[in-house]
Amino acid sequence: MTDAHWLFRTMAALVLAGATGVPTIAARADGLLTTHRLSASLASAAASEVVASCAKEGYAETAVVVDADGVRQAVLRGDRAGSHTLDSAYDKAYTAASFKTDTSKLVERAKTVPGFTALFTQLPHLILIGGGIVIEIDGETIGAIGASGAPGGNLDDACARAGLDKIRSQLK
Image 1 (cartoon, rainbow, N blue to C red):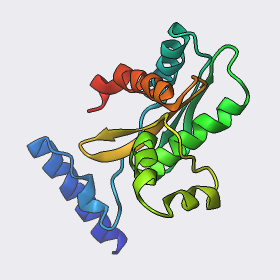
Image 2: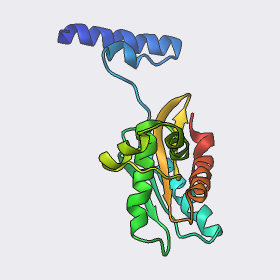
Image 3: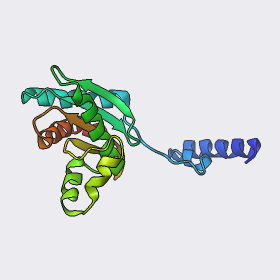
Image 4: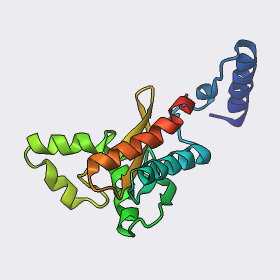
């Protein structure tokens, strides 16, 4: 595409957007994918709620929020949370984002699919324990929350869900 052609398409898209009120970024971005990502403030709010929710239950928790690619966006290590919880929370978030499903669902799948658990011993940062939940908008995984430090994956799940619930109304 020539510079003049690109400029014409961009100008046409801007005029159309102004006339209809509908953004048309995709019109000039042929071949590019549009993705969503949490803002830093939403990622931080989710992580803070995970740690606060678990603290109310007496658990020293760490929360990690990642984007859809598994890249850390927010990390919060709660008071007295063990150093191992930093890696575990990240691995849970990374696994959930990679598989686009909650880690507790992966635990259940591992019980019925032969050889499924072998994958988790071969690739780095994959973990087969509850506490990783996906963040979705209209069926698109945009990230995940990992929680670690409670005495059980189901309890980590509950704390991670509290973090998601905290920001859910802003996921539009």
